[in-house]
Length: 89
Image (cartoon, rainbow, N blue to C red):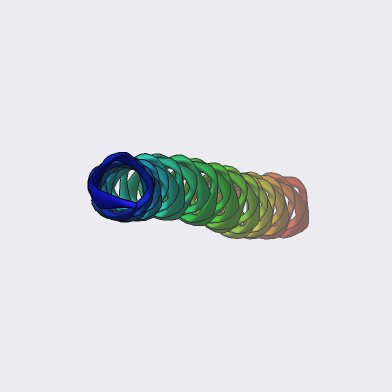
């Protein structure tokens, strides 16, 4: 009888130890998963920012090209105007 009680206590302790180990393992797994998800989200955010920066740079380049073309067109008109004035005089 005493042996059965001791064996039952031992099994109970073993079960509690297993439960504790399982909880610790689950917590570690959950924490690792959370960290992995954070890394994924951070990577996506960085990629999104990089794409936005690229688009802003493209837009800025287009704007600068348009300004340069307008400036060249104005210079050409001014030169044509001077040439016409020179011909007229």
